Image 1: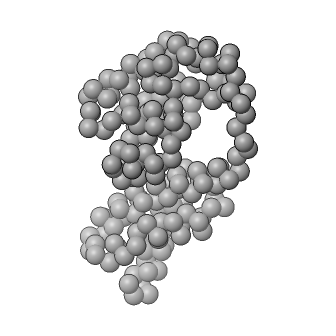
Image 2 (image 1 turned 45 degrees about the horizontal axis):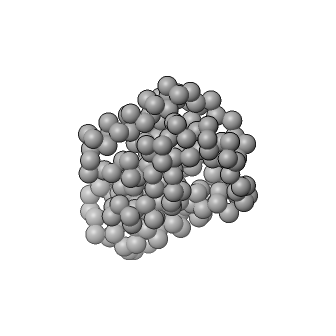
Length: 184
């Protein structure tokens, strides 16, 4: 890639990163996100001549890189998890048993009523029935019950990390619709 193209794509990559909604509040990670994007892109941009395709491809890679980089930082900054409380497990077992999810045992207060939990459960099941090839229930269990990383999930579902992230976004959108702005 000659110097002119590199500068052109460098500016485009930075522009797309700064426009990403998850980048806001993580501005200190620009260099790390940019480096991750460039690594993931490899030499693919040299083979694409259509500017619209280049932009679309960079946008998808940026989404994944922002998620991955922010997650890596939060894992490094997080404190060790405390021992689970048996009372919490008993109270929440009825809500999540079909999806094998156990809520976090930290002292986070979330107001979720039984009706909302059942609605989320039924809508995830309906989504899984509508799109069986996307393995939404398995995805849900891998991420929220087994706390697997995006990389592990993509390996187990035999899809790219970008596809796994898109499916997780679909589940997050479903939860946001049901719970309003209570869940982020």
